[in-house]
Image (cartoon, rainbow, N blue to C red):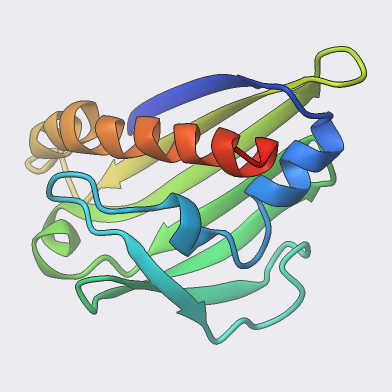
Length: 157
């Protein structure tokens, strides 16, 4: 799997950081277009409570394409994991699925930290090099931008 991770310190308690960053409605505010990676326009078809493993939703991208996101793990204020599948277009020919994971920790009483890891599973050995290049370039920039927007949103700046 090709993966990339980002980490950030926040000037808010871990509860506030977690509640804002993994909120059901946060994606259009923090996943904005970066280079060739489209932003998120919204979500639809939520199958159950977003804090429940097994719940899924359709994520609608700004270019009209969609992916399905399913909650894998949810430990309030500590860990959130999800699987993304159904990539379309060129990405769909390269990527089978992706797994995103967030870990949160307190840093004293008024600060926190998160790490976000995103890993792509290529469709086969023949697509793995292209997925690796995409992950280390375009996707890395997308994640860095998103992490910064998550901090701004959680801190209210």
